[in-house]
Length: 513
Image (cartoon, rainbow, N blue to C red; front, top):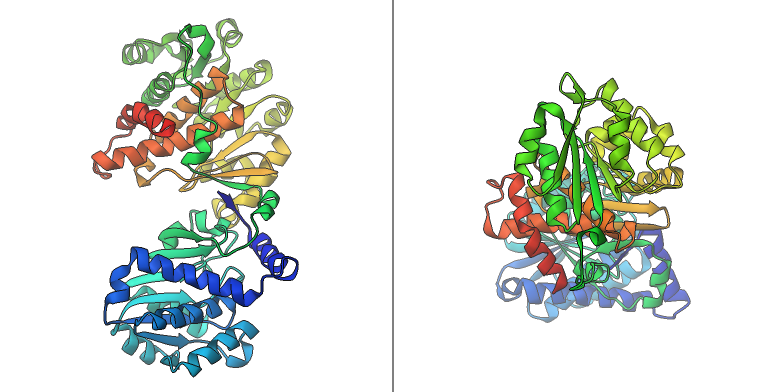
C-alpha cells in the first residue's frame, strides 16, 4: 500500500476534480459512504442503538464529510445531532451546500458550547470527529482546543474522518491537542502523519477507503507501507535440495564486553535462526566461554581486551573480515577509545556490507567522516531516535518533528541504508523510496530487541539471495512479526526479549502463506 504526503493527496484531489472530471461533491459522498460502511460493518451496535451519533463539524471540507455522514446515518434511522463549530462565513462552498441539506432534512443541529456538548454527549454512544482534515498546520487554541479536549473525555466510541483533528498530516505532531480516536477512516491513501510515533496512540484502528481517485496516480508516490503482501514478493525462495552451508553466507558479529555479553548472544541466536550458513563471533576474552556455551553452533573467537572491552588486533581481525559476507558491529560493545579504534579499522578496511547498531552507532557519532568515505559501500545503520540524534548532533525532539524529512536528508548525504526504529519503523536507502513497517507491538519496547534485529539483518544480508534493501525491509517486518506472534500466546507484560527468537520459525511460516 502506498502512503501520501498532504501535498500529494491535495494534488490528487485537484487532478481528480479538474482533470479527471469527478466533482468534489461526488468524492465527498463516496468518502462519507465509506465512513458509514465502516460503522455498519464494525460498529453495527451503534447503528441499532437508540442513542445519538454526535457529529462534530468544522468549517472546511472535512466538516463537509461529517455533514454527509450525518445525513447518511439519519437516512438509516440513526438518531444524529450535528454540533457545528466555527463561523458560517468561513465555511467552504461544499460545507455550506451540505449544511443546507442538513437544514432541509430537519436533522438536529446546533452550535458548539461547552454546555451544549456536555448535554449532548450524555445522550450519545459515538462522536464522529470531522473538525479538521489533513490541511491543519496551526496549533489548536481557544474553543477548538477546548472542544477536542472534551471529545477526549467522552467514554464512548470516537471515530475520526480522514485524520484525527489536531494531528499534523505529514509529521504526526500533535498541534496543541488532538482527538484520541478509536477509529480513523482515511480516504484514498493513508497519510504519513498517521504512522509517526507522536500520533500512533491518537489514530486507533486505521481503515482506508477508496473514493475513486484514479489508481494510476500511484506512480507518483514513493512511500510504501510494508505489509504481508509486500513481504511475500521479496521473501527468500525455498532452498534447493542440493544445498551446502557456504551457499547461505558467512556472518561475522563483533561485540560484547565484560558486563554486556547478552546482547551478542541475542544477535547470534537470531542470526542462526534466520538461516545464515556460517556464523563467526568475536568477543572479549573474558566472556568467550560464556558466549560459546550459549551458541554452540557458532564459531566464537576471543580477542584481546582492556578493562573488559575489545581492543584492535589487526592480525586477528584480518583473518575474519576477509572471509565474511557481512559484518554486524556493536551489540553490547561499550564505548571507549579502544572500541572506537576497532570501528575505525573495520570501516576503513572492510568493503562488503556492514551493519552498525547499538554502541557501534554511538562510536560512529564521533566519526561520521568514516561514513562519508563508505558512500560506495553498503552500510546499514539501525538507530532509535536517541542514537540518530547523536549521529546528527540534533535533538530527538527536532527529529520527531519531521522523521521523514530527516530520513531523506540523511540517506541522501551518506548513501547508507537507514533503519529509523520506532512504533512504525521507517527505512530508506535513497530519498526516492521510503518504507514504513506495519508489524510490531509494545512488546518490542524491551532491552535487547534491537540486538535481535541486528542478527536478523546481518543474517539476510550475508545470505545474499535478495537485494540489501529488501533484506533490511524483510528483517524489520519479521522482527515486528515476532512481537505480534508472541502477543497471541504470551502476556505482553511478561515476555522476556530472548523468548521472541523462539517465534522465528512461525514468522517464516507466516510470511510464506
